[in-house]
Length: 228
Image 1 (tube, rainbow, N blue to C red):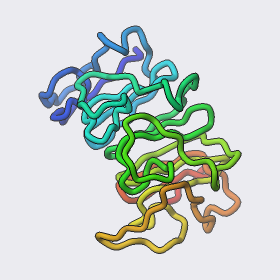
Image 2 (image 1 turned 90 degrees about the vertical axis):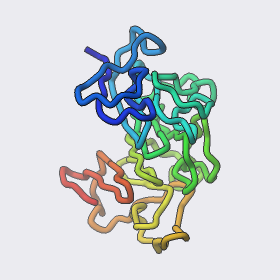
Image 3 (image 1 turned 30 degrees about the vertical axis):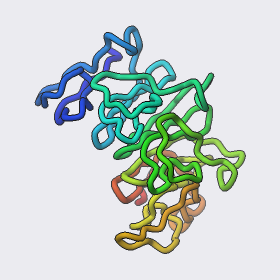
Image 4 (image 1 turned 120 degrees about the vertical axis):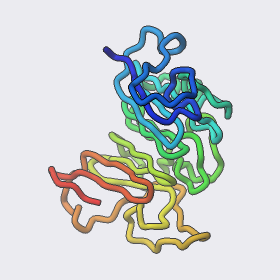
């Protein structure tokens, strides 16, 4: 019916029903505010925040400690709030969303945008500063002139499908960026604050169509087969 439903842990209001109890059955995400009359088409859950896509715009709720709700605030919300669309998302229609542990990303008009926690560069904007509003993923390097079609967010890294290839950015302490570079060690992780192309290897000559990011690993679908 075009509405969103959540259940389980609700200590940070991440179920979006304006409560903090932990239901073991689905509850309806609040539709009395910014979601009134809107049809939900996608949803994504992070560690303690949730986001959805409705009519080309992103709405989030739950923990906002790092700005992961994207509404130019760090105040938690037990009901959906609209992600800021007055900046880099102005006039753009969002087509895909992803929620990492404490950051959120979206695809709009063929480009990637992220907001929230950025300690390891997982927002992809050549910075390590958290952002309470969407910022554009860097396109001055390997993404120049390319079109993003899908995005996925992990613990401290993010990946996207771009013109049939996989690209990742953020923490690489376990090799989750897939670019065959040295990994880090505890206390000194290797990071990339801008996108890098995932190495070819078994993906050589194949077209990547889907991507997902776990806590510290990444997987993709290419030519009907799964790779991680």
